[in-house]
Length: 327
Image (tube, rainbow, N blue to C red):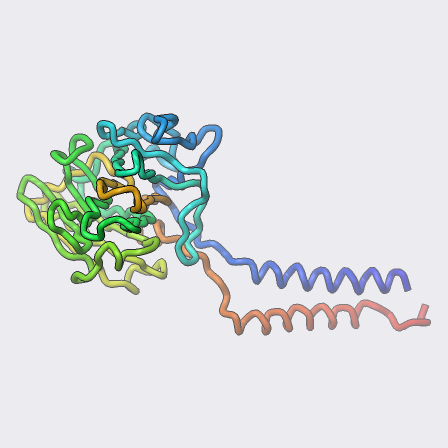
């Protein structure tokens, strides 16, 4: 009887373990060029405090893999300090996340100002034909109790040559300084500046409330126009499931990018606003590489799988456990 009880418990345990394995989400496998979740700890980032200037993002240079994608550490633009906050990552649907997040704090009861960039090894564009994807999570913040129309500039920026306004190559932004009240994608090259409202318009700072997943697709070609496509808040790893929320073309194939930033905050409206946040930077060769959503079985399938495993366990027990008194 002891043996029979042991077998019975083993079968139930096996069935339960198999069921838990099925219920646990599976993760899409991505062949990434680079993934930066802003981990805090030895060999990664130091959590900082921009109010005191301790361990700010600028100057930090953790190794980010799996390929040597970056040429150096983060660069702080002037006195516009940003930090990595060890308060958990931003989250979005079933996208796997880890580590901390980049952000600013309201300083001097008046302002938030932060801009940092990191150099990309060999840059992007200006050479052989290439398609490359980037994704990141971004929260543009809110005005809180501050004057709603004085939201400054909230942006994701990329530059050519150095970090700063004079070097802007790609800009995803709202800016009351420029009278841009709706999220806009702008590209600047030697050929000039082109821009487009994201989603056709309507995305004010209030409408942008919360965390968003941005995917950028860059098609560089020395013989054809360079094209940038922006996907906003995709929900699957299949590019064909989503239409670009904005698309820009550099007619003379002269888009070149040497640095990309984190969130850029410039708000001087008072102490009641909430600055933006930035996290989960991925670079890859395909859309699926940079959108590794979890794969979760349909709820209706759980019961069927559970019944199947439990039924198999019971059948196995009936075959292998002899009746009482037969030995």
